[in-house]
Image: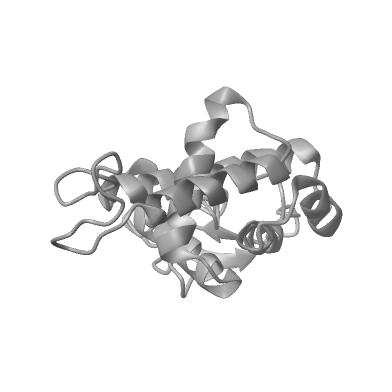
Length: 197
């Protein structure tokens, strides 16, 4: 996880009473989720989680389960299947799937994708643009596939629809294959949640 930029690669500075020392990673039996913490060599009682400042900072489960959730999400598995595989509550799985969709939304804001506009085809005039050869099938196919995915999920709550649309569009550019979706979502998490500050 460190190599991917999901956890700190550089030890944080203690900062307690102006202490300039870098903390060291130590085994910590009280940290049941991770087994390690950052600790100041001078102030032994000053400890912070190894996931401090990361995407997983507030997760109440082991880090490996976060990777498992990411892989299940990349596979587009139904929530009930993810619950069985990862062995977390349905609420946790739903929340973390939503967090992954938030990353998709953030990526789309930074990488806007144009649908329509100048150079698009007005299907009332032409099915295929006589100048560019552009046709309406791409947009219609996009909507058809999005509707099929929505129906496969037995519909969605209205306020969740934009997130599902963002995820679908994100997958068209970043994750048509499972491994690509898995790699890209975690690469983008490391870009949006920079931990070495």
